[in-house]
Image (cartoon, rainbow, N blue to C red; front, side, top):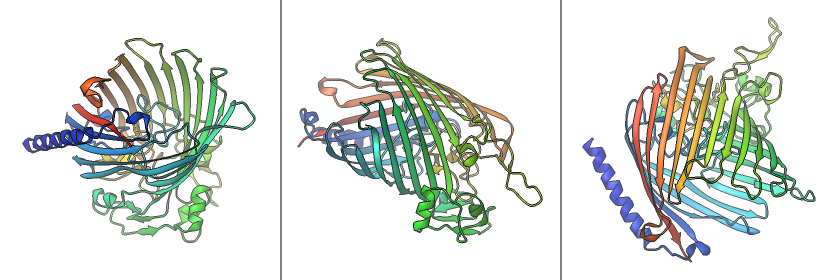
Length: 504
């Protein structure tokens, strides 16, 4: 324990020196100029139990750990784009040193971006959240929740709603197309149990399209609908079938593979039989719907949203009833010293198109496309990056598995979640997250009995608005878990940061 506290003290001294060093370059007028924003941050979790408290690690962009007593120090510099200008560019880099993480050194962000009018281009790794829910208070979106480290990619499209010409702002569209690569192949090989299944060189394809109907500047009711799909493809898959099988499959990564990742098609003779019968690669996605009422000139508003997850054609369309999904309500309250925003979510992923999955054969001609086994796949280890689920963290990430394997063992779940936040003072804010989940395991890994887990987080942040402490910020959090899914865990989180601007 003394060694850990020595490390903590050393990191604290390093962060303080870095903050003072950067602080000497702070320009009070820089915020008005074309500036580079910098940030130095130190975070430490002290916890007791088998794991770090759930909300200390979930939805932290993967810059976190499920191991008790962990921490990091990070340094970052960013040039933000100016959305109001016709042409603008941005860039960012964030590096972190850590202990009790999946790696002692993390390249968290490294990207460049440019926009012209409504068109955007991003190259590299950048922290991003999902499209419809509040990343600060919700459980996260079903495809990209901000739970895992960002995937390095080339992403192009219209990232923010652009009005359709001639419709006076009543219709807007946004969307993107992205290709990238996972960076955790070597880590998978070393973290997996001996002779376990792992992937290397896996590629990524993402695409999404959303439509906005309404103009909140003229009428407060706005409806949004969209679809987002992702595909894991290419790369090599080791030890398929069972541990130690030695079976390796090298998936194609030629031009055809890139096309099939974008437009789902079955594999050819260069892929295994299951890929020829279904689509090539691991494809999943979600339908997104949101209805907002935000009156102009008022301090309050309400949003209701629904996400529907699909793993194959049966739930992409309406072949089967849409029983599974994430239902949420977000309320923005009139200005008061107690509560400024409240979120309630209910999630059910228990049905998964039913329990039977059967492909037509001469003996049994009927077809049933059930047992979707969310986030899992027969070739790819699952929809994860560095052990953390990329989709909702409520389907417990593979990093929790003992013994080590990268499958999602708890994906048939029902969750109730409440998130609250407030700003009692200009320099003080707080949030509270309370989550209860029941898990039946999965159709391919059924739990002997229904498991449950209760997760909580209480957090207070202090950020001086002026004086000598301007630019500093501190957060203290208490996290706890109960139930029999991940055991009883409790801990304290301390975070301190310094930020400012380099002026030109």
